[in-house]
Image 1: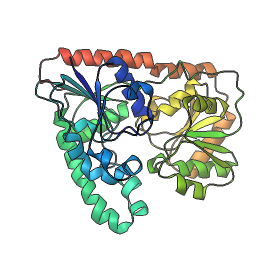
Image 2: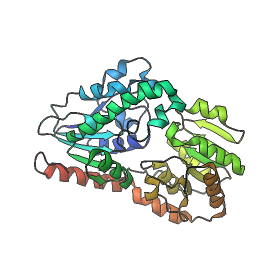
Image 3: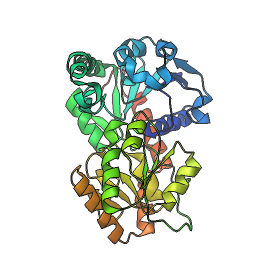
Image 4: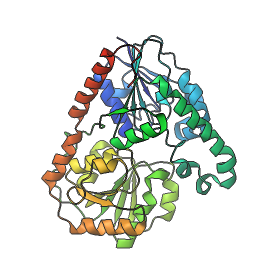
Length: 370
């Protein structure tokens, strides 16, 4: 059986790429298709296999400005020739789920999120505050409206959706009118574990620096309570964030897994100010024995237990988040309880559940959709 793995783009190792890495382990002979690949940006397990890219790879500045080319993504993803493959598994948060399998092949889509730009996060990326009033209304909104219609129409190309959380499964029902099997992403709880490090008094963010992450809210909350903040990660919002940061904020930039593990262990708590579809960072932090202060919305409701493994902030305001930081500082968290909660999302459990989903899908009658 020939297997094709399809991923939106390969520009760094985030939660979606950890899922792709696990799929590579389940299907070591699979070929990989992606809109764009920045060589060296992902793990050796992914880089080692044949990687087929789309014409987006050849466009100017595509490695860093790929969102410029959103209107071209439908044509780019549909141009992949998958006629020789019996099983297609897409890892999708944008366009990958719309790939076209051959007749008789099975397509499982591991959905990290329906296309967030086109549905409920338009303003975060292309709203008036970011793109300007004219461009937002007359250029980006019509383009993203067309993309939303295309995204909804192409759900029929998927035989089975797998969601990374109950939260995302709800969005799949809302936008695609489809059910989804829940398989949480893999957290490397063998690698991320506590040691004898004494935590400091600073807070930590590990995140791509993009608008919907609400990094600025956490910065303002830390300034409000007078706490130092370290930010690990990079992205298009970094320049803007650095411009508004106070002296209590340190930007670390990109970091290796070893460095990130050390950052987790040294932090008083790890912050998650944005609404996440799942959020692998809170699980990794808990695996290292560190609590999480997070906005109490989205996938984090499935990974953080309020008062036991972290603090859930009720609303996305600086005042509420500052209160959450103060509450976390007053709370004594049990490292063993934090670790046990993280183990629910282990890599071994993910692999076992995905293997079962794949076997069940292949055993179903041809053409069956869940």
